[in-house]
Every structure is written in structure tokens, then in C-alpha cells.
Amino acid sequence: MLMTIQRLPDRVTVRKGGETHPLTQADGVFRDHSYSLIFQSDSKSGGIQVTLEAHDAASYVILRWEGNFPRGTRFLSDAFERTYGEQEWRGMVAQRMMPWYFLASTGEQGQTCGYGVQVRPNAIALWQCDPKGVTLWLDVRCGAQPVQPGREPLELATIVQLQSQKDESPFALHQRFCHVMCSDPVLPDNVVYGSNNWYYAYGNFSRADIEADTATVARLTAGLENRPYMVIDDGWQEFTTERICAGGPYVRGGLRMGDMGELARSMKAQGVRPGIWVRPTLNHDRQIPGSWRLERDWDVLDPTVPAVRDYIGGIIERLTGEWGFELVKYDFSTFDLLGKWGFEVDIALTSPGWAFKDRTMTTAQAVKALYKTILDHANGAVLIGCNCIGHLGAGLFHIHRSGDDTSGRNWERTRKMGVNSLAFRLPQHKAFFDVDADCVGITADVPWERTREWLKMLSMSGTPLFCSITPGLLDERQEAEVMQAFARGSLQADVAEPLDCLETTCPDRWRINGEEVSFDLFEPDGVAMIGPDGELVN
Image 1: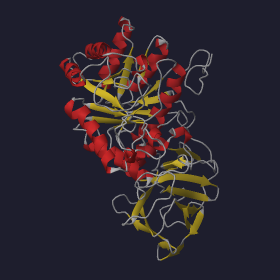
Image 2: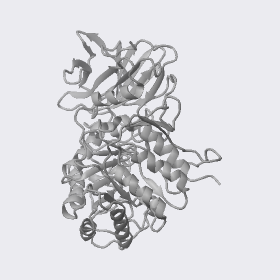
Image 3: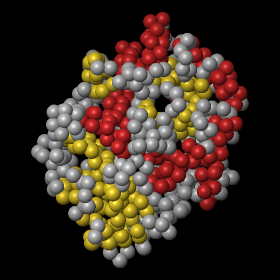
Image 4: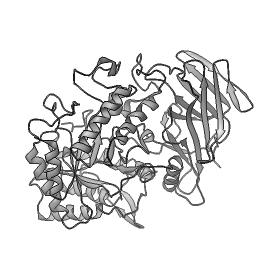
């Protein structure tokens, strides 16, 4: 049996800014004059619910369990939001912050154990392991400031643990543990697949281009009962001429797009389900009051303000109810709210000195309030959360874009980001949400020999398949391969498992429906170098 945390911690500390408050345990409650931390068994999950009663502001609640892991134990962490090609089983790194949950394993034939918190906690959860024990940091700040006590006790998180069964692989334990952490996912009513125009157009397109893309995906899926989606990505909105990934207002389309409701109806008439991209937290409308805006960034809306949630809900209502889009991909919310990408997040989480408007809401609660608002106003549309925090969004959106961008410009970015995301986030599929490892960019910049491998892997993974197809590029043989992939992706009946994830960040040996399949993922000269902007180094 690996180390257990299904017990009271050995130490509990609350931090407020620079102050440290060690709490003393009596009868299962840890307390001092300002704080009480209560631990209760949760009969539904089998975990331990942690609740904070506070008479003063608080920044972090720190739980410490003493113990150790066998020598040679390796650890796998989840990512804070998306993965960035960095997921891997590693040895013990004491200073490593592991978001939301982690797995410890003594090897393929040994024991594996999952340690984590159930989805949608009210605190940001970060784990650490060292030779003497396990530490859980529960970040209860409001932005970068201590959260102010509310009227009611604050349920921070429910801590859960799961031990592997005899001969259970680390991957299988990971899958089972994800179901323990989430008992109420919101999954799409239909299998989601189709086309997205980002990875060939990169925001430069017109209404005529979308009509043509719709015709293409309709033709390549002709005869399939489950109809595909055509997702209009960034570039359709009114302010897109000013900057890439521009925000609102989302009242109308840009000059080249025309009436968006008419466009959605035209797409449906071709037998395709219309989808659309939106960045709801960024808005350049100067009529919006300053009291709605984030203290740290004037262009970002603050979701702790009820009027902001109503306003964002109105945007989603327009896209889905008025215009008739059946899928909404919403993006950039983590970057907008925290000012950092997931790979930049550490214990500081965000830049110092600022807070959300409602000082009694933790950052986790603010993020969840945004996601719930979008779900509540979606009119049954499928929701894809991109640059969203999966552990906070499980149960609040249908699909999670689980890795950073693949590419239609260089293969190395797709190999690094896409394959890593698919392999290491796949256990969350159908447990938290549908896992979307991102698109197959079909362009002249990437050799078909490589593109084909990613197309095959995604179509055989049992997860959503989206393709960005450069108009007029495919020859007859390539079209046939895309049609075959779409047919398979329209069903998503395959069961996939990476076989070499303990050894590499880029698994190329997989078990698909019980049979081993290998993929050719590397260029003849090996790995190309890409710079911090994601482009090839020349």
C-alpha cells in the first residue's frame, strides 16, 4: 500500500499575506482564534471534505501528511489548465507544484495510487511530494489578495484517494480515479466531430470561405448519419481587424461576414451543424461601466460582478438562441482572468496586488461562476472550453480543449502538444468531459506523411476529431483518407490506451480495441526546433 492521506493531516497552517497561523487539533478540528478547519467524511465519494470557518481574511490553507513513498516511485501530475507538451511520469521533485491531483506509481507491474480533490472545489489545489511527506496547498485568495470571510463557512475541497487493484495498469487506475473525482460530468448528447477553420485560415477569412468550408465538410461526410460541426474560429467578430483574438462586443459579425444568423441557417441547410468561437471575458466596448472591469486589466470583465454575468449570458444567448449556433467554443478566460498561461502558473498564480470586485469570492469560485453562466445560457448548445481550467469546468462544459494549440504550419508543434495532450489527458475522457486534443491542420506546410499519422491517431482515439482543411489541397487519395477518418470519428467507438506513457512524453505505441498500433511521429532528421512563439527556428 502506497502512502495514505485518507486521514487527518499531521499539520495544518493558514496563511494570510505574510502572516502564518499554525492550527491546533482537538476532536478532529484544527483551530486558532481566527480560523477553524473542519474535516468530515463524504459518504458519496468516500473522501474527506475540508471546510474553513474564518473570522479573518485568508490566503492559503496548507495541509501536511507525514510519510514516504518507496524508492523509485514515479509521479504524474495533472496540468493547471491545458497541457503544453510537458506531461510525463517523473521522479520525485520536491519543489514541483502538481495541480488538482497526482498519481504515484512503482511501475507497470507494481502499485499505483491517485491523490486529489474532487472537481469544482472552491480553492485552487496544488500538491507537493518530498521524501518526508505530502503537502496540499489550497489557494483561497481572491485574485492576488486574501479572501474576505463570508457569512457561511467555505467548503474548500473534498480530498480523495484511490489504490490500484491487482494487475491494474497506471493508465487504467488513472481512468478509474477520474471517475472518482467526478460523478456528474456534462457530456454532449451526440458524438462531436467536424471541421474548424483556424489551422489554415488563422483568422483571415470571409463569409464565402465559411460557405465553402461548410460545403467541403458536408461532402466529406456525405452519407454519415451523425452530421458534423463546422466551427467558425476567431476572425468573424466585429473588432477582428484591430487585433488577433479580439474580444467583444459581439453584437454583429465583421464587415466580411454579414448577418451571422443567416450564415448559421445556411450552414444548417447544407446538413452541417454550425459552431462559433468567442472570447467572452475580453470586451472593448467603452460603454461598459468601469465597475464591471477587472482591477488588473481594464479590457477584461470581472465575473464576480452579477451584471457582468448577465452581460456574458446575453452574449451566449445571442450566439445560440438568436443566431442559432449549435456549438460554442469559448476561449482565453484563464489568460484574461489571471494574466498568465497555464505553463506560467506557479504558487503565485497571478500578478500581485489585485483582487476581484467581490472580495468574498475565491478565484476558483469566480472562474466557476463564469463557466456556469455560459452553461446556463447555452440553449442546449455544445460547449468547448479552451484555455479553461478542466478541474473547475468538469460538469460545466461538455468538451475541454485539453492541450495547447497544434499547428497547420509546423509538424513539431502538433507532435509536441497534440500527442502529449491526447495520451496524458485521455483518462479524463467521458469522466470529466469529452477530451479534445485539438485539430488536424491539413496544409501544404506540413507533409501529408506526418499529418496522416495525427489524423489516424485522433480518429482512432475515441475522442472528438476536428480538421482544418486548406481549400483545394487534398488529392483523391488524401480525400479518401480524410473521409475514412471522419466516418470513424463520427462514431467514436474505439477504445485506446497509450502503451509507452511511462517512458516518454510522446507515446507512439498504442492499444486500439485490443490490438497494438504504432504511429510514425518523427521527421527523418528527428525533432525540429521551435521557438517561444511556436514557429520553427530557421
